[in-house]
Every structure is written in structure tokens, then in C-alpha cells.
Image 1: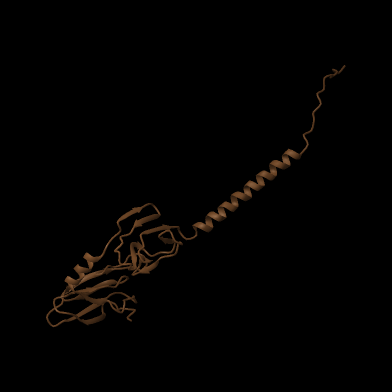
Image 2 (image 1 turned 120 degrees about the horizontal axis):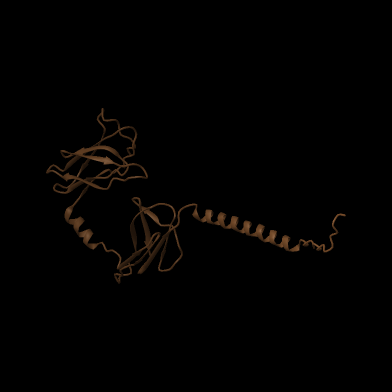
Length: 220
């Protein structure tokens, strides 16, 4: 699997594939930065690891010969997937898009989302893919079951669904927040204990009586 490309002063890294003539050639290298050229077209990759990912990008129509070559030219060592070049049949893609089904309803808050899922009546299981980065801190529950960390599907949140799943709920809790809240709560308890102890000691301390002096003789 190629994991680097050379600088623009050299030939770069080339991928070659054979595809069905008339299909659409696409490239996918999410973290690549540099020029991507093939079929007489040059596009610019602007990926940065964990910051910006390139989407799947069309390159052009596969010629009658069925051979497609793709060249990556960038600076320094960069990661390029093993299958960076592929081909898509437009009619099959359109059919797959038509068959894809979204939720019946979706409710999203600041750090939560809930969805009612469609049911096909065939008892088939699937995976819900959410258009959210697959970062730590997310927890999801299917049909009110236990909360589990979702999986990653090409960098997106993916939640396996059981047969005839009907509800999905997810929430996000930033890493470190739970332990930070626990530490803050412990600090508040310590302060409260100190204040309560000081108050009890103040109540137990005897209050000195000041006896008034009524007779004060003037100096003769």
C-alpha cells in the first residue's frame, strides 16, 4: 500500500486500473495534499490528517480502451490508500442511491440526536451511517438498549442495527469532561466540608461575657 508520494520535481506516484468503458473514474485519497491528474484533468487535493478530508472525486469518463492512469504529485511523505483509483457505473450508482433510505424522522440537539428508522418488514439488519466525524466521546443506543461506542465507516459514525430496529439515539460527551466534572464535584464537597466544620467549631466555641461597668469613679 503506497504511503508516500514524492515532490513535484519528480514523477510522483502512479495508479493504473482497468475499468468498463463509459464508466466514471473516481479517486479517493482523504489526507492527500497536492496535484491529482489523469484522463487529461488535474485536480487539487487539500486533505490534512484529522482536519480536512478529500471526498471521493470524479476524474472523468473511462475511454474505450478501459485503461485509466492516475498520478499523485505532492510534497514529502503522505499517505495514499491502496485503492485510490476506482470506477463507478452511473446506472448502478443511481439505483443504489434510490435504494438508500434515510430515517423517518430525525431530531438533533447540541450534543444529541434521535432518529426513527424505517422498517422493511423483511427482518433485515443493517448499519446506520451518520454524517458526523467518528471521534471519541459518542455513545449510541438502538431501541433503548445499552449505550455503546459507534464504529467508524470511512471516518463517519456507524452504528450496527439489529433486525427490525426502529429507534436510534446518540449523544456526545467530550473526552475528559466526565472526569473533570467528578473532580470539580469533589472539590465542591471538600469546600463544603471545610465550611461546615468551621461553622460547627464556631458554634462550640464559648462566647466571652462582657460584664458592664456601671460605677466609674472620676479621678479626684
